[in-house]
Length: 112
Image (cartoon, rainbow, N blue to C red; front, side, top):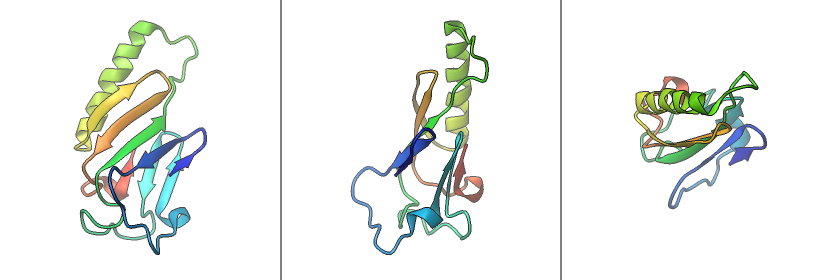
């Protein structure tokens, strides 16, 4: 599931999405993703509350960011990924990719 110019989320393996209204349960904004914004998360392993790979379009706010600052951004995003209980995969000065085991324990099911 994605939003052009903002990011995407995918769930490895099989995921039962019958009866899910993606517009109501997945919100992708600039630099953030929220699952189930208006309701409680389902139990771990059910519906969309399971392992996922998240890609967020996150560009430095300054256009003159140098390659040295890329390492600083990577370190910061690695810390944020780990704070969520996830694993940093990559950052290329445009796209931040990380894996989460589930969305429990993340405020409101939001990754940002």
